[in-house]
Image (cartoon, rainbow, N blue to C red; front, side, top):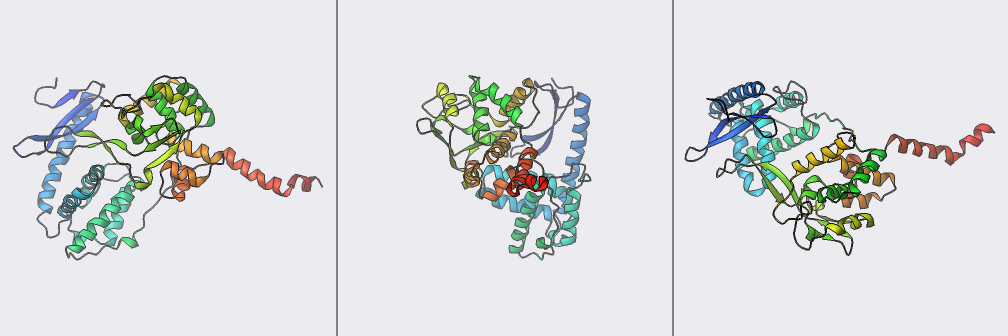
Length: 386
């Protein structure tokens, strides 16, 4: 029960949730947004701040939308234009970036006022901790934001606005994040636990560790995409939870199953013999979801992530996220001499460069062994003794 006059509840997972109205649908039905906290008082304070920000946002937008070429209005016009032509998940990403990271900064500006220096200053802000009380954004997020901005400016140019921003002149700082992988010892412990399990969800994690599937791909995998006789599986769908922008429901999010992120992600993966042996006792003949054995019930990515963290905790292993299984698979493949082109296709990458630059990170031990090859090549030890 919420306290009188407030919309704050304690959830089943132990967290507190506070809700406030952000808009109304046709007929006056309210649309809500939520904040979360570990305590009632923390949630109440977050709710108070969020309501103030919402009021400021509405006021600023009302004022700025009166300007000629108001940037917030052009952003939302572009968004409504592309909506029929992009995936629902893509639209949600655009919507979130525009409302969270772009409009708050440019809410009072006209697109004709935004020059190259202004855009460069914006990039500087969002790469630091002074980012409108948010954390500094990652290079990937910044790249996504600027991709949207370029498209919006192209849209504005077609509408014959006079533009002053040259995107080619912008400096975008980049940092190469070191992706984490499980050590060989950690991987052995994880395999030993999973291979002796009879639970489909555990075998699904094992399958991911030896195929590099993305979490959405394993969640959407159905038995009719697994060929045990010929020893391969087909990746044709992916599952994810996205925000629900439909005005016909109050549900804030929903689970969708769509094509993978790109054409190269649609692929066939051969399966090693021991994986096939682990799959046979679970075999289903139809389109049942692999992780549940049901045609209707499924396990969504968030639930699979929780299960994975529980396993890591039980085994006293580092709390890496589910995607570390994909990194680990790619790294072990390279370390064992796997052909990079084949690996790239198994991972569903558009090019070999993506595989090498993003996912393959040789260990210090592997680098040392490679350095020693130079010594053996020239027989350095004999030269030194001679």
